[in-house]
Length: 311
Length: 311
Image (tube, rainbow over all chains, first blue to last red; front, side):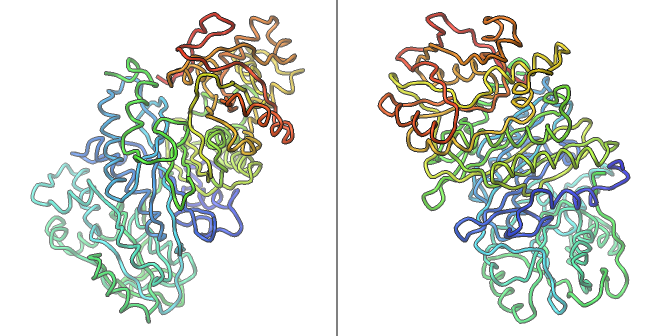
């Protein structure tokens, strides 16, 4: 079967178990892979993309390099891994200007630096268009899988919900982001949250949201639980950008590129999680609960599954 | 300046220091990067390539996947890092058959397995042609940089010297490899040598050879020493394939894709290195010596610098 007929999710499900270790800190297909070494989990993650797929109007190579490290780091952090270093795999047309490549790598270095990590080299190859992969490794004392049990509470970390979706919408509709500085910042410099590590040991499970919140919640439901969304974060600037609550909710649910964490919290641990997040300055929004059953519901109504796929 | 005018080596030299840690176990631009953690070096390496650039006639996706992990693992092993796991970053046309991708990943998994390591997932993206990056991480108690002092001896590890070059030549000349099983094996399944780790602590420095032995020796000379090559390994099958000693030496010096180690050995440690390699079954060939001065010489004559570059 051809990839476009199979679909990316089905392909990844077939690939994930190949060569994966039996006793790994995280199951195959989770946000990152890893092995145990001396009682500590060492996580490894690679994420790739085409430059033209992620460069919104106004973003240059610096921002795209930054975004690349951010995407990989988000997967590591949400698994409670502290990122140590990143490498880049670059495919570049031979008539590209060197300044473009230097800015790309400087942006990646800046994101790494802000995470207390480093760039550890990489590789360049010719390619018909600019494409890159970013790999990162991280150390996790308590690696956190995708996991949920009925009764658990659902939290959204960070404050990019709907904002990155708004920036993507603005790009495709030719709208300016002037007057929306937080939307621009969220899309141009989506730095993942080191503060997530302060929640280590308090969570049941977690998932990185990058293909949209709705798709992420559906992936949570795929674990064999039901997801009831009771509320969604609706920021004033997203509402103002979207023009209506309905349009704003669409951006929150189907925006993508958030690089924020969806957190599953045992009910008895909720107060501690909220207190620690507050102490660290990590925005946290209580969005709903996990129930017995299946599927994702928004205030009782089934939530359509739509999300970005490469094939 | 455009990349094709700048050249890949000059580009990499500019990129390597960006974001690289000050107190790293290996200097920027070495075969792998890394950080210290609890007194042990954790190495990270990414290597990327286009499928059509490396798939010789007779190689399928399985062999290309195998070759990908081998290339990355070779860089880690030659730095005395024990590979633990690998991730893949895949760019794939959407009309590709899923069986092709599965074979690619199975080949990568097979190489990882033979190295006592694992595949830890990865990422798929659409692309106009098949391209991939392979990242790997490794643990090194005594990470070994590129280093050489006048008086040191030069050894070549492994037995693919000239063989991979012969296979590449056969590919471009439309010649069959029937009757040359070791040449075929060297090019199709270039498994790096775990046995190198047995030499940990005995070597001054090391380099991975993948762009050709001559280029690798020139990179050694770039450290500020002279390199005198006194002898080169000339296997009977490479000689038979090439037809003359001169043609065979060309393959040994400018072949590429060896994924073998060039080892720098302090004179007083040579006996111990040879004994340990013999005990482990690692082929080792004494090729020459490091001298004060600069440049690379083959039996007194300057050795031309030609090597593969992507730009």
